[in-house]
Image 1 (cartoon, rainbow, N blue to C red):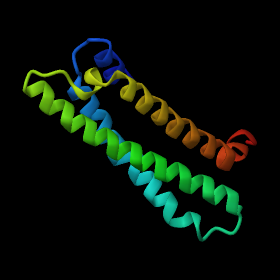
Image 2 (image 1 turned 180 degrees about the horizontal axis):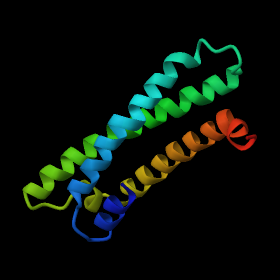
Image 3 (image 1 turned 90 degrees about the vertical axis):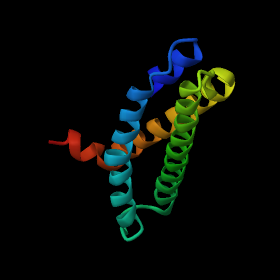
Amino acid sequence: MLYSIISNVRGGPFRWKMLGLVLVFELCVNIVYMVGRSARVDSSTEISTAMKLFFAGHGILSLAMFVALVFAYILSVIDVKEGKPTIFERRPAMAYVFIGLWMVSVLSGEALFFIRYGEALFSQ
């Protein structure tokens, strides 16, 4: 994802097939995983309210970023087919803000995983 967008912002071609595969992966693996996990978070009594809020915030941000990426992807593919610069090329500041928010989403997900499951992973 990062490579496709950053290289396009810097004037390279829009690698729409690569980004399309990333989107399919995100949908089939990460989104399905998060939906399955979120269905059980509220029923767990071992998770504090603050952690539940952190889980919810991460989930909302991640879903918003995914929807935004799908929207930007569709617009960019249309632009490429019409021979126009993509939305990432036309609005590089927006692209970098998007990348920053995407990284917050990814890193918060990694942090949640290690907070929740890290002790069990490293205690064996």
